[in-house]
Amino acid sequence: MKNKKLTHFTLIDLVERKIQFTKTNPIFDQNEFKHNNEGERLAYREMLSDMKEMKEDEFLDKYLHLLKTLAKKFESNAFTDKREQEKMTGYNIGIVFVLKCIDPIYEFDLEEYPLPDVE
Image (cartoon, rainbow, N blue to C red; front, top):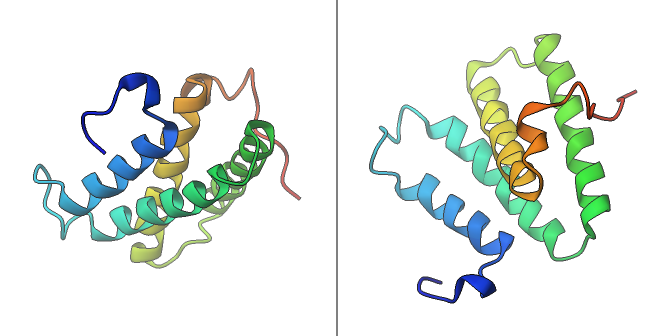
């Protein structure tokens, strides 16, 4: 994967490197971030699969909807187990990372570009 021309470097390459980094990260204690990393990798694996099948608008709709759903669950304290909360936090982080690579607005300005409503 390394040393390819940057004109051939894709979003899929970036996500695959993020997965590898969460597995081998020498900077932080892996045990301390175990559940967070598990959730982040789960998001990346799901998104990798969708990247191969979906168009950009469909992909964005799906994952913006998921972010809105997660936000509501966090607001209502739906995740009572600490491990599950950490896992879902990592899942959320993974989604935001990929979406902001597509368009940086998804990291900052969700009031001007709100997430879709969730029933």
